[in-house]
Image 1 (cartoon, helix red, strand yellow):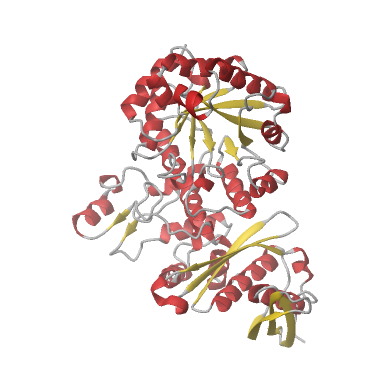
Image 2: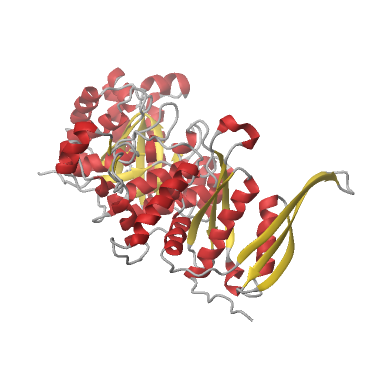
Length: 535
């Protein structure tokens, strides 16, 4: 029987990615990333491990609504000496709003003997009992065969017996894991091909780590040998050297190997945005040389390369950069970036003639601002406002005259050390002077409170607006405490709409005001608010 051409995408960023050194997702981070993955068209989104930490518990208690993806919980099989129905860890992963679960179990006899100290036969029962019980509670159950390739090399019969136990219990997917990342592509392809003779590839998945810089290659080798589910993370985040990079896997599978990943036409154009969005949320510098999505991926600098690319881009570009949402950069050309700007216009529903002088002016402004530290990939609302202001299609709802922020640290009446902030803002609203004072637990919170007090009586649309995330990044660490600061703010309202804005300044409060100004203006514009009339 001919094997299906459909590859199912399983993203583990929210769990494997959280194990990256220096990465600490907030609940807001998880929700934002999950929404982007769902919008892309990923089949499965693994949200984390319920019961393992408070962040995952809060995320699973109130996950975003998914339109495309199957929301999946991760956990482990029951412990020895307990029944599946009476294991607290198993109960935690089956009691969430997720209707799918991926359960990890050992498949290397060395681990069963030494790490778990469990009889091998009993461990097979633990796998079967756990998955069979989960099958009665969930829509779909998957088995992550941990250290499968090491286990198969050491004792292929026992590794296959573990898969058979999960298979018999009703697992939809049996995922073969190269957990320590030490297996090479030719080994992966050989072992998967042997497994696929006994278990159809339509039920096999692959999960690889990047410890030999082969995670993507190993995944593609496994697909060639028959697996039909691939697991990976955005930008290859993960423990130690990371996991297979989903951002590279998708175009390789579709554009190079001709597989169907279920993504709708044009969806891959979101890959560059997704990659850079994650970096911005984590305050991490983007990998400029990343395949497909890096700023250098389609950059050409002078000489024969530029001449050849201008005649036929295929000379030095293996795919059209726009397919993955990236852009061609010819350093010596003043046209670099124009097509990208026009694409962004189309995304926000702004009809602009490419010959409009405002387009060229906007391009220069964006280049200048990005040299100052702005990064609009993770701040779509700020980019849209910048574009609309340049093209005169967004009104000025208010103007800042001045602001002042005071910070106080003292011992209160209870003997507790507390920090308070007070902000005073003076605004011009249609020729009227407004001055308000706000207090908060920090300077930005106080500034936000003061702005709202001044604006709410005139713009009631701001009543349901809230700030859901605030991130600060130092751009030139060599400047010490005088370094330039980038602030990114994520806002939301009662409609469920979310938007991100950016501010840059050597002063963190000034940068925060710039991001707050854009956030408020964007909310008013999108709600169709009419500017206050002059009196």
